[in-house]
Image (cartoon, rainbow, N blue to C red):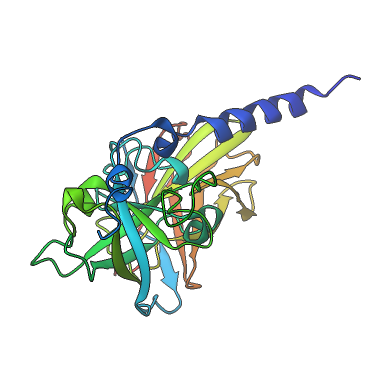
Length: 287
């Protein structure tokens, strides 16, 4: 049976996209988990003309969870959310890999949480709290029980912090520490960033440096010539896909976050834009 060339091309591209992002948790990189097993105490084109509407995310209630840390780099701390470089993408190193329950299949990528280390001698004295951004997934380990190595197994609420963030609230040897956390609005520098990759028949848009709620739940794109407002589909994390013909169009983007607010960035990508370029619009919370 013969398959149409377009179908084969699409399947090949999807395979490359799905299996190309890094997962530092699966690569044996050292983390605080080994301590926890022994110590359970513890060039851009900038246009500044978008609009945003709706009520801003309110600070959430404090909830209980647990935290560990993992080691990595700016290029791996954002693996499961599609961020190539957490610093260049606007998040810094105060980032966290969420357990399955919190990660929500990538829907919480970009969300911000205030975290406090509590009720443990491993908590660092003098530090009240830190704010971190969800940029990765802490995958479950069903071979181990949830209270002894399988920290991120459902239904556990677990924060596997990037090591630099963890060391701000807890000692290196503390292992797993109890924490309280709450959702908070994200404060970003600069505008929302749209990075377009792919080819003329398959476009992948990375949306990053999003303020306000931070976690994007919908993306639309429109051209100034033939392309009408078109809904993009979440590929993984904060990578959004469409097979609409975007080339040779001046592009506008519309972004919706989990608090129901939306931002429209008009004509941020000029006609003649190239794959691999990043374009910047005005952020939530910016006047």
